[in-house]
Length: 469
Ligand SMILES: Cc1ncc(COP(=O)(O)O)c(C=O)c1O
Image (tube, rainbow, N blue to C red):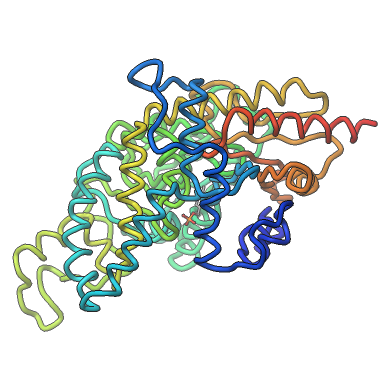
């Protein structure tokens, strides 16, 4: 899939072209890190303060605009750009960006191996505890990965299955979740069944029960794995994962959840969710640096999930058949074994740490409430516009911060392009003609203000009106 198909505006991703798309052209021709540093300035001119304004209560309310304005001003995003594509990439707030830059500096001024062998290993143990608290699981259940895709591959390839066994995924999965399933099936003679979440009755879903039933209908005694998203990237639907995991567990089926979107968007409790495995991203809604993610494996299951990439001890032995030291052997019994796969990135790990601090300072509960508030505001506004169809549910159980919609008579790419050209609102389209899916998608997260949402609604109204005329 190229950038055009995926709905990216490649100009936006290329710093050399920022001046081409900047209406004010304030960036001129600057490139790379120097350009990135400059990006900090314009947003600050929108009134950034170093301390948050007083909130009306200990927990900021979702509509406390001065507070959330202050939060939005923590980003480097340049002035007048309404960034609504966190679902693809979450730009880091300033504190996270700076932690990452400082870590790059630190690992270049000391002994070259220092960052990897001292900082990285020790620091990661502390980070793992912080991350586990954030996710609602034990530190021994979390491994850091480069992205969601890696975790989905670990989870799909990890367990032993036999020829003829079945795996279930959905046709609203990302290729990062579905393709490992098809690859494993092709390699080992397994069968894949696909839940048809493209059916119109799921847009929006009538009830979570309908979705559970659709999974249940495909389960047979050969089903060994259910791989599914917690939040679909297509329509933003929040699937009833807890109930599906319960169903699966009752039938001895493993569950692997694609959590590209929920971390940082939703207040997570993986133990309560009850899944066996969970692959998440830190570079989307958590807004850590690029190439950051994690893979969760439930403790009781870890000896059944083989690592796909591995350089650690095997049965406690090193490659010469000697016992490794106790600490190393013990680590290899935990999810940390999924990290035993070559060099890590200290700066990326530092950015996760800073991102966790950022989220914890605001609190995951307040962030989820704010994101839901912005999404509801967008849905409510869009609903008033003739010709707009909204695919995301109003039921909080079935939706969160991704709003999926289309405008009758306006191509989804055209809509994204027009919003960009006229208002510098950045949303994307998700288009899969194979399943008749074609929709625009707005990601509503902390860098978006209520005023930005109103701008989106106004922009869509204007375009919808022109299409009707
Ligand atoms: C649902 C879903 N799964 C997986 C991915 C891939 O994520 P990553 O880049 O973290 O591997 C994406 C990316 O957008 C996604 O939306």
